[in-house]
Image (cartoon, rainbow, N blue to C red; front, top):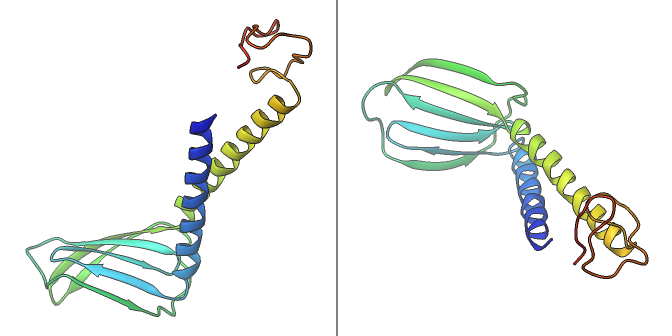
Length: 147
């Protein structure tokens, strides 16, 4: 049960962090550009871009407002700039946040049910009433041992 506690709190932290980044990216964007690739988090999405030819400019970071509409669906783009041709893939952050949110809810529910069953003297495996059974004795319904 200790590992479940660590998992549920790690997932909760990831859910809050992804949600905060998603909401924050609707107002301000953060960009990192390397010599041939880069990452932009903006408009509720993460945009991965890369150059299809040799090295470009030096590595830089910047933050600015992006007044564009929110990016709701995956998109792929390509074009040409002063540094040469480039390609990009834009993935909405909600697509990463939603599965983490669902997993967090599921783990919290599992933990809640295990704690409730332990408190009510129910078998953790099947929910059978263990009233009158000695500690360490197997459950007559499913064979699980109570610790």
